[in-house]
Image 1: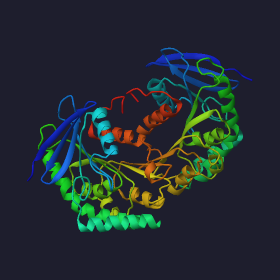
Image 2: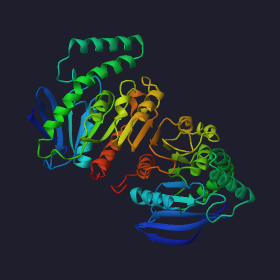
Image 3: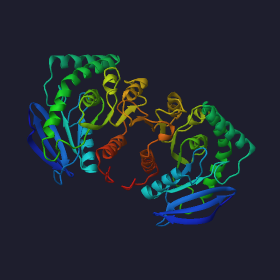
Image 4: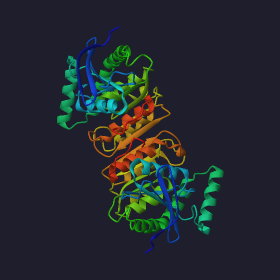
Length: 254
Length: 254
């Protein structure tokens, strides 16, 4: 079993940001700069083609840390960020770009490639969580949330379905094809984002994935707009969702 | 033109509550007890079979006043609260109770009766807003929101479609049959609540009404649960929605 190795540390706007590795998985842990007090952890999964420190990721992490005092961690998915791509990764990315250029549907390629990445990524998320739970400020018995849209949902749904440590999750912006069966295994509270005018994910597909979750408490947030136009206030909504379910007050800033 | 006549005043938990009449329409105006400063107004519409001071109404009003410093006003719908019922009201209410007892669908009666009530109620809302805008703490040019679910949506959609003073609205929990055409005229920001497992309103019907709004910014909140199980956190979400669109900061309590 690998422990988390901290390799760099910076601090800004009240947030301590620590780079770590767990084996060969690179990650970043955001915590309140005021001190690493024991607090719930939120794991974040980034979208396809981005990485653990993508602006949206950093923004969400800061909101979760400053709004609720949570710890927040993200790792690079296989083939993303600081991690090498396999020949298979290169093939699939080329196929996606070809489809995009030809104006053909991206869905079938994204669904297939993300399902493949999830198989590689789920064990890594588990290993990362094992290591982070060794830290005294996180601990083995605290509540843990998961927050991932797009590819972060493709990886997160099978992860959450098979890891009982996760007690609340925010998902969204994906197809049901490869995920509905895992979603049916999930009973924890869920907030699910979709775009009402998504040019890639048909409306019925987004609704079907939301419908698949077995959770007694689940909320769909569907906003007018295209795939990439998810309103920024949904990040604040996610913060409040985690505050409700992981047991923290939200300060006014969130 | 009628002015608002104030007939009683109480104060609790930081909220000043003033009973008023506009002609023969009884209403209540909730304001910050700290003083009637100029602030945006939110008009509230109550559900069928309830009234302006129903606990859910009072609770929402208090959240809007203490969370954002808004003024909040509600009036009794025709045939509700302190207002007399017509023979037609009695007939329709009896028809609804018969259907309920027989286990028959309530939808067709609710849709028909609420459409009738809306015809009586929309001019009253307009008259009430005219009168409230004469008050110095509200004024004729300030932003005005509308917040009404169930029958409050059946009345509110045709009201908002025909009154350009309303700049943001929260609706939900109704059928599209009598409302979709009015909804297509509405372009202001909308938050729309529906229950994913509503035993009265089919899922497709709720989605169709949300879809009908022409608003560029509209958000659907669909929660797992039956018709009457709308989660309480949706009231807090409405407060934040109005804070965003009517221009007020939300304090931590909301």
